[in-house]
Length: 81
Image 1 (cartoon, one colour):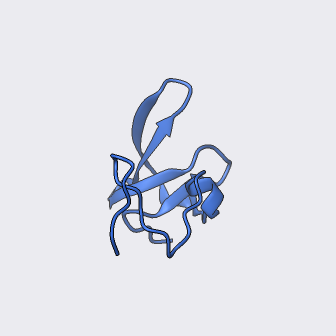
Image 2: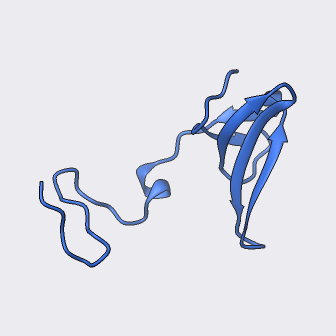
């Protein structure tokens, strides 16, 4: 399978969701956050070991924002549409 930068993947055997940052001759470059150590990790993984995953909206963002609702600004004000 061909993976594109930005795809969300996981090892077929399980593990954390990882973001594809690119590909090279050795495999797929993946980046993920290791919660236990609190570090961002990166590795090149053979593509045969990976599967594309689709995360639910709940998994992507705990806070639900309605599509018509303006996004909050850092100061707490709302952006005009």
